[in-house]
Image (cartoon, rainbow, N blue to C red):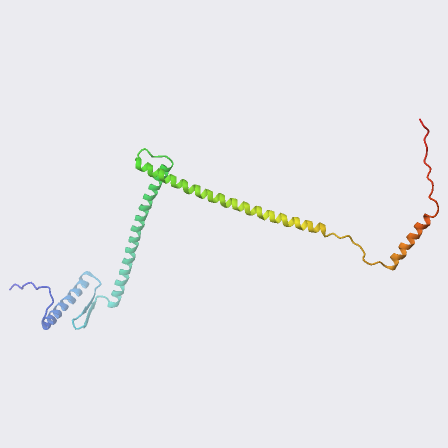
Length: 220
């Protein structure tokens, strides 16, 4: 008798569903055991029944060891895939940078007036406009630097002028501040000395002044 093909859909009858589960479960566990023995494969099988009951099979000493091995393998594969993705991304970025460098080299040669034979009128017009914009920016930057340099020189001039003025004022104050050393009080000894000097001068001037004879030379 030929058995008909079972339609793959959920069995609505609960009793039939439980019977089918038990048969298929036992067959799956048997196949897992046979595969592990015949092919020396490490197998871990976990089954939960519709009622939540756990059934498991492990070809190793512990199903936990197989699960840990699986998790480590998945992690390593993820790392490898990530490295491959990063490598592909780096290759793409390198290719893109190489293209940009090539374009920049072409633009540089055109700015220097080289390689213009294959350029169209529109490209030459764009190049001319870019050069004019660049010259405008260069002139503006040059003017800015000149203004800054001029401001620095003016500031330096003001500082030197102020310093010179300060030194001049110090010099003038130094010249005007020198006062001769005099005595504000007169002692009795000083008075006696002055009187004795006056007497000596008086004595010398008593009598007619001496007559000075000038030497006469004979006339020529």
